[in-house]
Image (tube, rainbow, N blue to C red):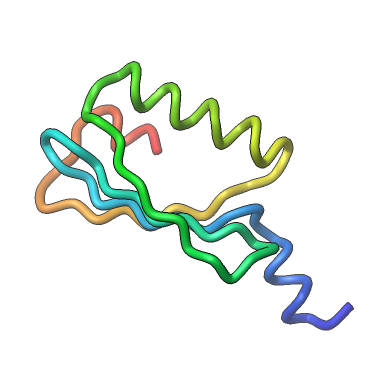
Length: 81
């Protein structure tokens, strides 16, 4: 396996998260795909928990890389990411 392939397998997914007051915009690329998935989640504890749980089920035992964009401090939920 090449070093590049090893680096790509370091994470199960790469996520860009635009944190906002009402709706968060997410871009996700699985390490085994070049397709970028885009979706939104509401700014509620339940929606955030559901999203995190879905990541844990989809990428069990794997780490995910998250790039978080904030216009200002995101609060305790963003701090937890």
